[in-house]
Length: 409
Image (cartoon, rainbow, N blue to C red; front, side):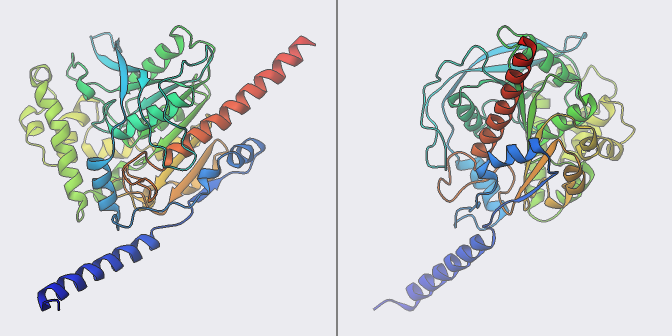
């Protein structure tokens, strides 16, 4: 006969498991899809079944914090080999690191429609080139980036990861970091990649996560039709930095705020001598940053010419850039994202722009999207991204074929 203590523990465990399963069911559901109906958009949506497929998080990740943290800590890291290129981006010696994917080893095959494991099949001469923009302190070594690289390479695409200044051990030669509204480095990267051997006549795509997504949409909105990027994907975009800053000051989200601040302060610390050259930077305050706002006040706002950190946040919202986007763009968000909250998503602006499609999953956390089918494998969104890019590529090539036939007549 079980002791009362054992019975109590079993009962407690059963209750917690039941609660977790119930919570998981409430977070399970088909994504919310918003788009302006056009022949192009309708054709794209019809070729992206994953955008309508039910997303179900693992039962042991009963809320957004479990999914965000466990995915970041326990997700598998696919094997990817890169060739690094240091690219000058400014006249004063500023550089960024471009990591060109050379090969992949394994890819999770438990996610729906995921291609089988491959060993970097050689891309076609005119294969699309994809530029990836990781999150705030992320880079080519992050698991979510490597999973996407694996999917893209296995789909026959060429891939390059744009590591912002100081991230992924890229050099810092000038006292300037990167910011949510600074797009000149990306402009240089896009131009350089497009002019690289074998890329001149190929379709060009871009994928951004979190801060990288915000920078990408700001770039697209300002460029309007003047960009070589043929299609883009935005994932976990904060959209409104002022709102997100407030969200980071509440509850468990303060843990993310502190950890992100510590991560960017470590990059700053490793390049402290360079940053001490700037009279605008409060070096001691930067090193002591307890929040992202502290760091932005000490470094980001003054070095990019903002009169205050609040002005920087207000002026860097990619939500304001949405109306100007002329490039086909898919935005995927998680409603329960603790860092890029669902309430900050500019739903109406995205719905009104015929070039943007919005997909909002009921759950997923931040950079999580761990699926019940493969909890620690590829994020749920990866397959949807591949479907979208393939659909756009098909439309582009069909259009080129029609134009070529017309010109031949």
